[in-house]
Image 1: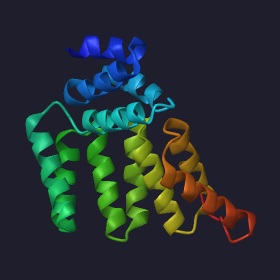
Image 2: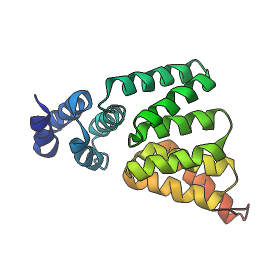
Image 3: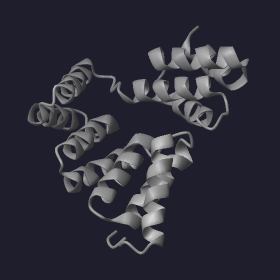
Image 4: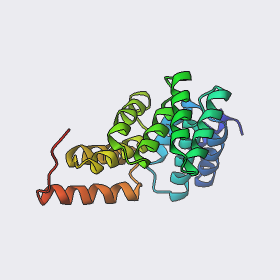
Length: 192
């Protein structure tokens, strides 16, 4: 099944065809598939939602430039080894070589967050969302950064944004509930 057929089946197929179509799009789809995959995140079919989410991450991780994609993968491997300075260098190289590629910013934001530097991560989350407004991962990540900085209102806004794109994110829903509970209890919320 090619990408065009997969897009058609994702929109019109039976539940098993739609799940398979999402997987095909993850393997070979491009930005044209993103709106349909984001729409699939709203479905009640858990298998379809999981396949659509995986497909989106796969598409978002392909820049179209093999060298940039290799640098991104090197950075991801460095993060997995907890070699954060090396990861930052890889992701900064990705950004320099492909400044419109949102995932470079998202991965660098994640790395900053893991290094305990959420304030440095927020601009990269914003850069990701400016290039890819449906990047639920960047929205949720930005929420975590604001939460770490005690900026509860901003955190809640970011968590709501992530859930408006992908309502099945249980951890984000839990983070939003806890943040709202803290706001209701009057525990701060100053900041952006």
